[in-house]
Length: 298
Image 1 (cartoon, rainbow, N blue to C red):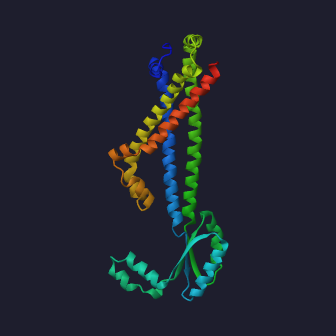
Image 2 (image 1 turned 135 degrees about the vertical axis):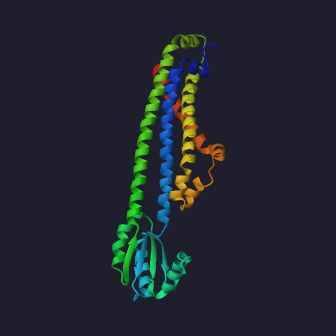
Image 3 (image 1 turned 135 degrees about the horizontal axis):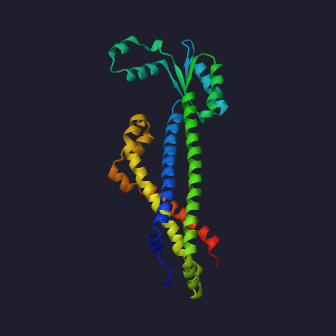
């Protein structure tokens, strides 16, 4: 039973094949991890803008509270609105004073009478904005409608593009990684035909013979995933100031990037690393099992 070399011996005896398999796995998980984080970030940004009032309805000076209530009831009847908030002239003045508290001259020039009342509307889904707009335009007392459809549409396009491109590349690279693992393990099986035949003759179980090959594939996958995690961690730390400068107003982004420093992130972000290593091990093991099933018959 000592005839079958260990997994480490398999790797050590063919370093170039092992390096090719590990690098392929590394590229797979590097690009997959980067696109995963990019998708998460884009979703957080999209959720932030979706949670904000997407439509602001400004009323004329002659509009009454009943006009605003009528519009609220009409929008509620569509079942496409998640929330609405009425901002009176006095409320608008308070908001204006808060925004310009550092400029006394501007505060003296503006009174509640010259500010319009408004209704802030959030849709359940950004795709509903184009359907709600004509309903609001026809309402009585409405002077102007401002909505962030272009911003939300752009974010939706980017998020969908990242998901599509990232998912497609991850699938293609995963298939490529499986083929590389299958090729490497198949070559190992061909080189060790005699040892395998001897083990069969002395009564070794099929799993005893298969296990070193399976563990070898898992080793390639887990090592490639671990190396990818280290590079991704470095990229996150490097891009942290840029992310906070552009997206720091988003609470979820602050939670993700705000408290990151090099050492704590490397030590505490074990969940992401563990998931990558486990998936890498499984991917490599599956490639080995496929090769074993094709080239090693019992």
